[in-house]
Image (cartoon, rainbow, N blue to C red; front, side):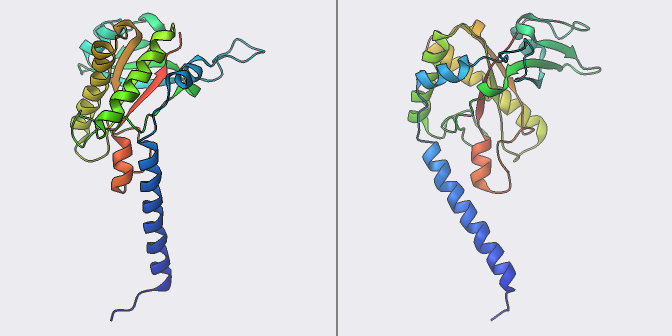
Amino acid sequence: MPFMNPITSITTAFAALFIATAAISHAQDSTRIIPADELVRAWSLPSKTLFTSTPASTIVRKAQVSPKAAAQIGAPATAPTAKPKRGIQITPARGSALATAAIPVAQQSAEHFRNLLFNFSDITFKHPRIALQQLSAIATAMNRLDATFLLEGHTCSRGDEPYNQRLSERRAREIRRRLTEDFGVSTEKLIAVGFGETDPFTANTHEVGRIQNRRVTIFRIEG
């Protein structure tokens, strides 16, 4: 029988326990529907402090966008420097059809929606029934608010970067399509962009983490 170092054994056991605990937590999160009232409160929080007009909790999300996506945001990617509506800034990249969209969002408005996860290399939902219930609640909240929202598509690290970028954009557009066509949210309220594999929610070192990274995140846009 081969000798196994006790420290290695303990490390392996803790790693297995961590993965099992993460899997249980993920299973619980993936079945909980965040109700519309809770989303309205989260997306209504002020982004300015009481004593200053500085948007202290506003952050800028930078995403690569195609000319079509840039036009949907409100400015052509071919312009040298454009300042489209909603405070978003588009900067074309030299020698590329892509541009960078700098999008100011309310940091505390981020909702990661662990129940809106996608199947590997696809835009179909891992839990379709739960996903549709959550999308209904999201639409109800959005329709109550006079606000614009950033829909971010994300992927795990499996696959090459260009493919994952395109896949993340398709996931964001699928969420936008569902919200507008199935639940009546105005297209003017929604900006869809993809981040590929560049912004994981958790580590990609095990399948539990990769599942959680095939996701969509929604922010309230500032400006």
